Image (cartoon, rainbow, N blue to C red; front, side):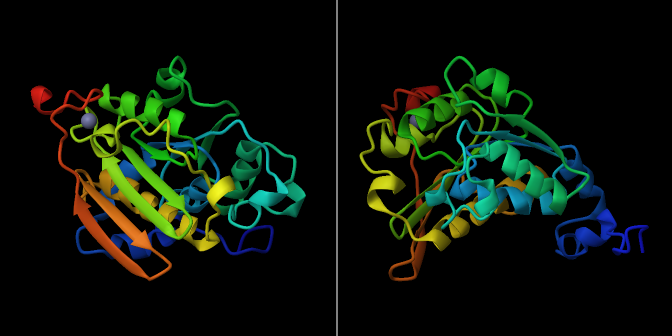
Length: 255
Ligand SMILES: [Zn+2]
């Protein structure tokens, strides 16, 4: 027991179930401890993925979001409570994540991602997790991934339908191979609505993809798109081919 009367939680106990996986060896935990995951957006997707990344032993999280907690966030952004309304999301999230994982290093940026700031905000990231609800910024993030920054785990959740794919450094295929420009995507959660647990499902899968990439285990969702429809309960994975005329990653000419 600690002086506070609470049991002492050792890092080795925290990840005992992780290293029980047949392809995860204890030495691989150093990869997690040395990893930096940049969270672009701390809405529903970020709130779901960040705690799993912290709990698994990721050493450093970079939280990027200019927003403040609103009452309309509380139905699905589960890192925040009523007392957080009005607070910067990066501050409220950091407090919760530090309570969960005291050894975690957290960097907070209460700014939006931009073309000019992407290298500064995301530089040094081992993996980037997309928690955006804005097509224009998603285009910026995709372009950054194609420039070779780091893998980006993209996620989307709208209505009952969610999707996840991983764009590797250099792209090919990138998000524009799949959707073209996503800047003009018409719908947002604020307009179309979203089933709260859907962002948990998608965010959790994004955390899983990030952990797999860092550890070097499993099959990454590169070149593939995972789709789920919580209305019917159906899920499937479809291939994402490189688009020969993709204006962002260069498509077939770049291969
Ligand atoms: Zn492309």
